[in-house]
Length: 336
Image (cartoon, rainbow, N blue to C red; front, side, top):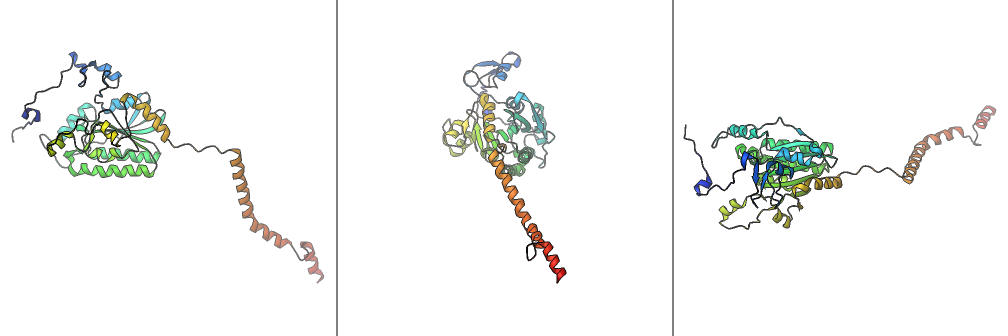
């Protein structure tokens, strides 16, 4: 067997590790922007947003669903779907080993589909988790999202998608790339059924996910400072040998260029979604007023009268004689 190869770009570039160690007991976190320290429960209470500078820490799928759903109540759909290894892909380790390690976080794929209520309105949610293989989109992610779109179209339920992904999953090759077209077709089915799609772009949303369903929502929100681009700035700089501005691909820059509708603080997102769902919800059929009821009943009576005219004319012809009396016709026949 060939020797195990470990490659670290930071080590090749002779960079030192800058990650700050957690506080005692592993319960603390430090904000990478302002350096403020928090305990884990403090971050959880504030939806993992820094209270000093509003930096948005990463949020995994299950806590995000708890945050969005009314009373934190939601039901997962299709949790049994698991990734396969059709290409027998091996890089530094076999693909099944990577999947097994990723599942130790409690997730079975990079996306979780759930039915829930937001602001009292029933909807479906598809939430991606960057912690599972970088939120990459493989065959199962595409299948789950397509099933969610089909159910939303069938039951006229709004679909909310929260993205956090590095793009298509390279371990599945062209099968992963095919999910771009598959998810776009699913979105078109939603539009044909006149069902709204609301997309929330979390950090980061890149690659094939941004180039497919993440960029075609009816309403598109982004979390503050989220990276939203097909290729990240580091890849572009290495390719073009040009220095990009610090704001390249960030949510605020995408808002300025019209790619997103609003940049929304995570703590305000449930209320914002509830208002939008209330606006986009199909109105119930209004109860007809008295005038409309009389007009409808008059049309119905007129239609019944029109249908009865042929039969009525036949009866009149059968009853009428030369003098307009059926009995006189009979007597005249007897006398003649």
